[in-house]
Image: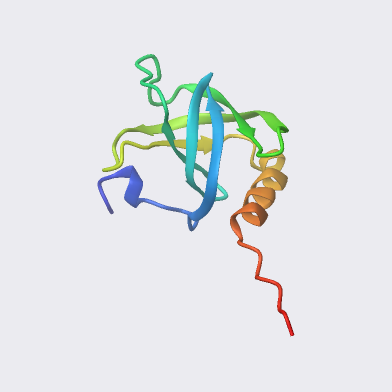
Length: 115
């Protein structure tokens, strides 16, 4: 079994277009996600976050809208080479529609065919 939490995956990760979040009140950038959770990079240092801590995630959309109160637990802090943190979603059925929207946003539209 891999030693790093970054190498242990139950669900495949999906890379998205740049998306911004608030994690426990800290601005963060979404790096990738799976059905089980998210991997983010905080934009500011956060010394008060600890593994196992329950946090709320707010997804900030480009159109100004947001989804709030996605409960999560911090699974790892800075264990990955890129300094990312891992978050496990606690209410997956509630988060599923949001994850589908993230998937839709991560797929680049095909260019229009011109004949």
